[in-house]
Length: 148
Length: 148
DNA sequence: ACAAGTATGCACCTTTTTGTAAGTGCCCAA
DNA sequence: TTGGGCACTTACAAAAAGGTGCATACTTGT
Image (cartoon, rainbow over all chains, first blue to last red; front, side, top):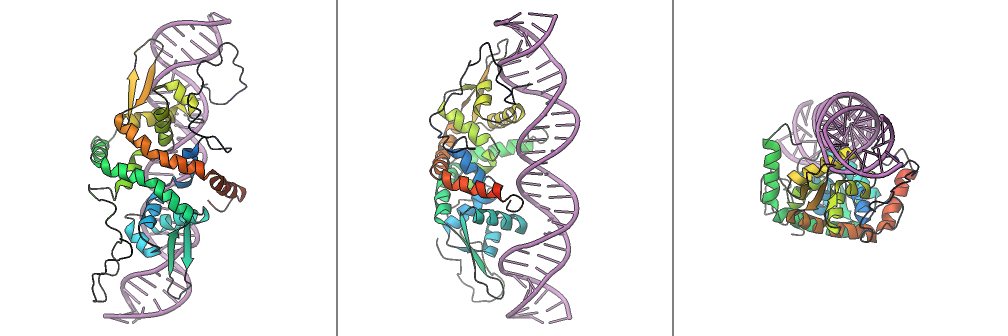
């Protein structure tokens, strides 16, 4: 077995050969998160969440249908589902006008805004390196059955 | 591009009801990506990739085993798999010393480095808002069967 | 000799995530 | 009446993603 289960550390002979290297930069402040990045990822790691946040960040509040059309290829189910999670995580605010033909809109909370801002560099990176990125994808798709 | 919805307008009632709103900020330069963020996500959206990049970014090159121990809970399969993808995507460089007991190490390419830097804000966000984040998780887990 | 560590490969299987299609209640326009 | 839009909801797949465990080839420590 490889060392997965932290069995009893019965390591006797030469136990600390290499210590887990970087320990400073990431603050393991709270239980469960290895570092800030880890914490962040657990909140936005979903296919459409970053896009939703980013979209909401750049326009004012959006109505459900607008978002739906703006974010290409997202389905109702996914959009609603992720909006709900974002809402219950305190990143997005949902406003229901309780009107007869339904009218609802979504906007960012301050927390959501701050996260959206943290996403900006990623967006820039993608824009700046888009050629490389698309080359990568050409490779993946072109080569078909192997890479991934 | 704040509030305008392309209403250039058609006073004509029917056909173009609402156009996809924000079209400026994200540069839809290349086919397939709706914006830079989209492109970036397609490259790093995997459970361990951001963590791998981030780790590699803060120490020099790491040997396979070190990474394995450093990134808690990752399995051999996943680590290797994602390292390979990162390698073939040009973000990570693998150096095989071809020694008898295998010895290999991984480091970031310049491209990988730039991406890792774009991840810094996310890491900071997580660190800064870790309390909120863990509250969110307490809710999710505590409430069990409903939320998510 | 035997266990353990090194860096992977591979087959098999479970869990998560995402997608598809259809349906709801209500209103307006043709 | 039919059709469409609005904002969702639900049941049922399909597809990823992730995990476990065994194997390799070789060395070193016990």
